[in-house]
Image (cartoon, rainbow, N blue to C red):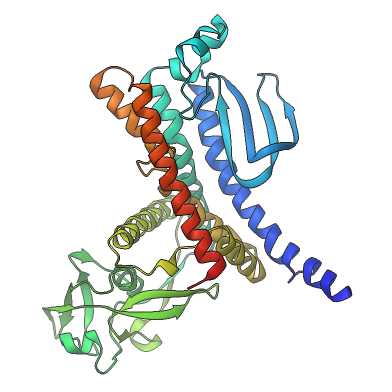
Length: 379
């Protein structure tokens, strides 16, 4: 019994070491997302009936002076903001339900607001996720700076794609597929997600530029949290001597600019990964669900608070990106309908919307089942 309790409640145990960090990470990301909806909705004059962290039965809560019920619910895998007038599968009220609203409720009902207010309110959730990531990176860059290495080749692995392409020790990367690079990390970032793609490299050699083409090969590596990840490599090595590592410090404005760039790069890599995944060019094992996130949260917590904060930032930008996919019932699905409504100058027919929502819900549930399968049964 003692061993069981130790395994559960110790700092390395299931409760303290995994579940609590996971709930902290997820709660922060969900709270920021839903707070985006709430704040912009309120700013647009839309009434809010409930703000919930989690789904299902309410565990605790209170009602503020505006009539909004703030609550913590039993299933901590998400959250929601319920606006005045939100009912039904698509959150769209019927004519009868709209007629039942009081004049005061109609003035603040979500679906009776102009399209731009509805769109701004929906977009605000993912936008706040991106802003959270930017804020985290900005603070980290301003406090800690960033270590960078010069993009110079110290060694070329024999038989590697780089060796086959003719890349030589002493070469300096100038650009990767037309993108200028300034550090060796830039090269790694542009290559790691391109396994199997022919990439054009421009190298500086003996004062002149040389163009070569190499195709990165897949390699399994361990990331900082101990996860096995598959990345593209061309087989070049950088070291202390040629890389000349240095610490770059940033002022507040520079740190903010770097944070925006870094967040944009993560969004770009996420989109590129999903595109490759949809075409069968990425391993399904690279996708995980709540169990995987919980494991990562535990590992990050064991490494220190800043690792946990970085995980929050990465998860936040991922949640924001996924929510913008044009699939009902995600935020992107709502925005898609608002765009159609703006073009045709009338609401999308309810029956059509419900049919599309059913298809979208099946897609979302199918994806959730897929990542749960990966979590439980592995690869």
